Image 1 (cartoon, helix red, strand yellow):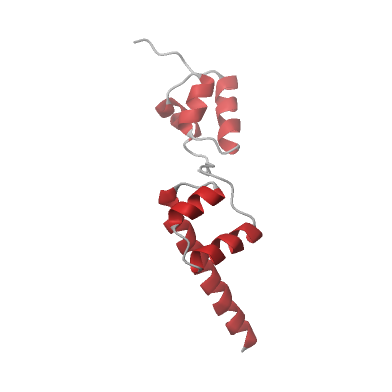
Image 2 (tube, one colour; image 1 turned 180 degrees about the horizontal axis):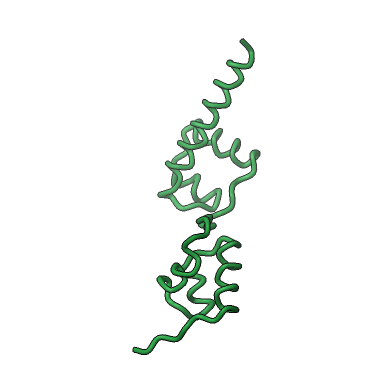
Length: 111
């Protein structure tokens, strides 16, 4: 299979898309190149790919944590907040950890 050289506009577009946070696979699909080819041209750039969902606002986080503390099953929480059931354990654990750290920070400031 004969390879085709990457043109400067293609390379510039790859770098723009990577700066926007796209993964090498998605850039390759848009440009029409393979992921290894894309990585060869943007491998020196910082990796800050956006994956998953955007973060929840603080009010939603508080509501979810209150329901979890009240004993609501993770499957019900997932359905209610539009998440996957498998991710709920991790999300609730992270929210509880953030709450503990915030409380510890407040105690340290009060001393």
